Length: 278
Image (cartoon, rainbow, N blue to C red; front, side, top):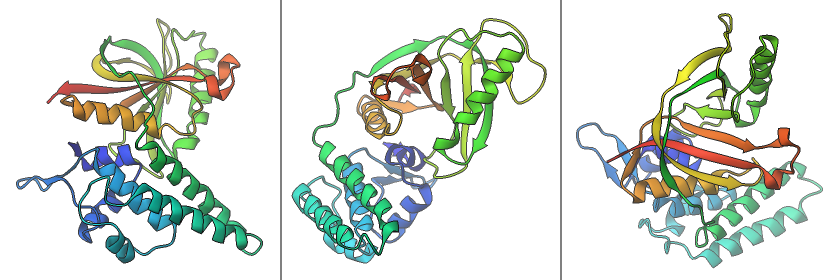
């Protein structure tokens, strides 16, 4: 099972929202530790949560959603065809009002994304997850709290500017290390880094340090950077199903990206989670 922060990262829903859904009885944790009060969830509960989010985007109140989605956390709670029909009906209504409500186009995009996500639940992409040992390495990196996940780019610019200024050549692909224990809509704690073999830097934001080795659960995905959610869900679902727990911040290794002059559909990214057996 996942702690609430891990389930937040898996579902891309803030912890405070999950706590509120628990408070009103809309999404009960699979288990609550009697001693610590910690909430625990399972990957199976993603289906129910996706149904709740889809109906909420349609404009239904949480009270109405509670009546439409039974208490059980099974994937059979709400038939896929019912959700799809509701989404399409709402899409038609938005199209009719588009001239007066241009702002609702963003909601339409979210509805389509939720529809695709629900459709994928029964046919998730096949990813080969492996457990491997990653050796410790020397990296140059810069860590900061940025506005959101789309605001990481300037950190890479700062990193490579410092390396170029001091004649340090990267010794491997760039990576992002994400330190938040939950999914965050803002104020994301991230480190951009690259392996190095030597050189030194003056004291400042960009620093050279040793990244500890770790046993990691890893998968490699091909495609653009705009939707990592299916890959993260597949990897974290595998971790739970195979008796592991997450013990450190996840890493994204950008094996092939825009700097190689390839199309986004051909980007290659490795996602790693440090893990240990339960």
